Length: 316
Image 1 (cartoon, rainbow, N blue to C red):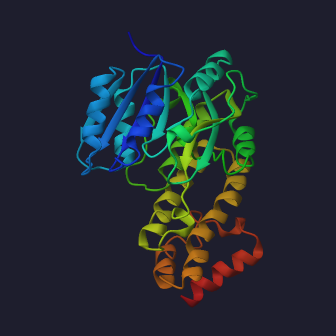
Image 2: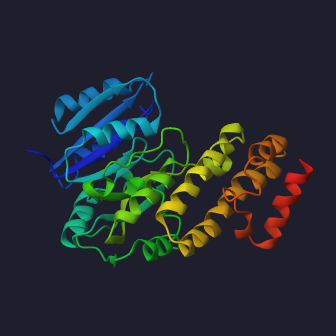
Image 3: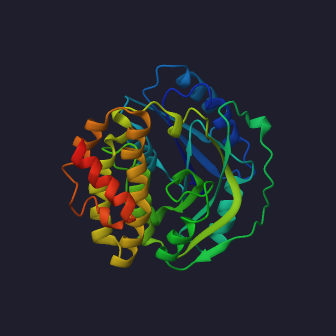
């Protein structure tokens, strides 16, 4: 008999965090699930940890593949999933104790296509036993009958509710359909996946209840060493987003989205290049092929940042 929920975990060399991650799934108050753990060619002790959990608990399905990236690993999990509902979890994060129960109740009781909770930000040394979230079996929630108001509202909810985080959601399997993560994008694949799935959702539920402990160490993202990988994803992601906006969304939403996303683009490229005093010419060379085109619509930036963008491209 197929489980109600399929949890998909993509892992690569996260043996340090993997036991807590898998334990957080095994101890969920909601038990009718399968957990597909796709190891993406790890070279640490990940395989040993995954096999141990699978031997102890038949709900865990171990999958091992050659390294192909997180998107390929998630896609493999999607292809194998048997559940009516799909949830994702990163292998360095943990579910809150009632995460699956909260999301399953909300998505089924409201006949929704997807539901989202919050990501409780924790430090790198977080242990599952440290978790103290005040969740409720019947938490407050809000129902949206249209994708566009939902996305606009979610974008204002704050750092714990980013709309691009697939792991803070549960999806009806049918709303995902044949959509898969783009294996040519990283990062950026989450953004494109969500934006491709959302238009098929007629009813969306958001709750303030925390569903995931998300590691957010000071060494991550903003404090990371600035290198080519930091901005190399921008151009292919922008190309993909242009196609999504042109084919799936009305013009008024596209304008709103680019006002939101272009701020991220300038912060990730020009602002960081200037802050670190490195790779300014490389950043300019990377953006130049799409600068002045619909793929990189700088018109949605406020005029001071538009001017900064123009000067940066001219100088470097």
